[in-house]
Picture 1 (cartoon, rainbow, N blue to C red):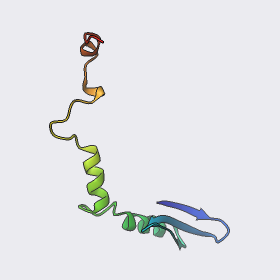
Picture 2: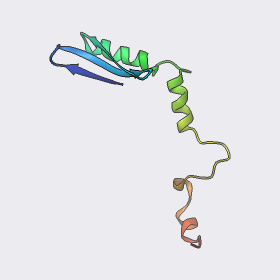
Picture 3: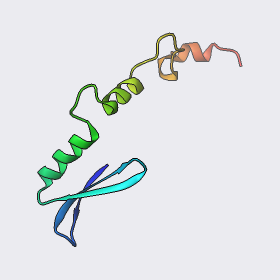
Length: 81
């Protein structure tokens, strides 16, 4: 999703992809365009599919092995290859 100024039309445009199709909507002000972008993306709606996917990607999985950033350098140095 993107918001940009369309100089040829002198309007702010919001572009996004929906159901495999490219969509565009134009607005007179940038504030209107940004507000529409937030509404369409679901960024301001808790529990929306977009926010739940983001939450799942940032939460650690239970019983998962530690990531490389969680392993201490001394443990790595003492591990035989």
